Length: 215
Image 1: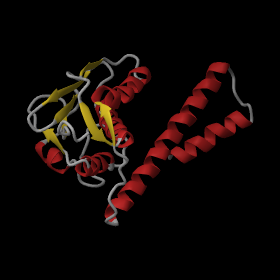
Image 2: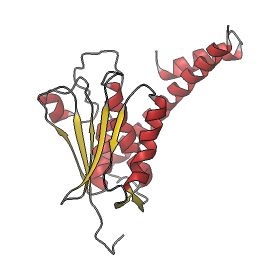
Image 3: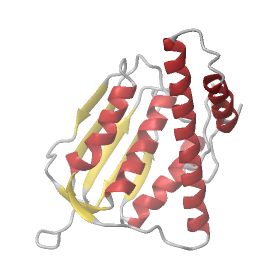
């Protein structure tokens, strides 16, 4: 069923008070919240794609932030949400300053972590590492999931592309990586998937580090 149908169905149960236990009530409320969050994300993605295709650049509200301030909040949210999952985080030089739109960076992290969680087993770790390179600050997210073929890697950033995943139950709009790429482009950065022969997916985001005195 669609997120809206689920929201309506479980809301009706709550309104009619057709609930056996308090645990059921909490479960229904959590389902409604999760589906509403999913629907809100879908609407935001559709609006972003509409603006991009109209030739309107994404509006950035730039600010200077440390990389740990930019990346850790979203990671911590996922750690709370996925309590049994190991998130191995090593940002290295976490006080490096970047001039970015913090909300858009959070959107990038949400999209990339969502994919890593969605396409890997709950028992497998997700690695998030940061590194200062000659080109800028490189964030890498690596999972041990189902991975991608070379063809899927080549097309991953195209609109609505989801590939032929083995798990047909995995849902998604196919817009997350497309929007992520545009956000990175607007920041004059780079994003790419590493072609791998082993299990899992590794994605890199490179953001420029402002020269000293320009931040």
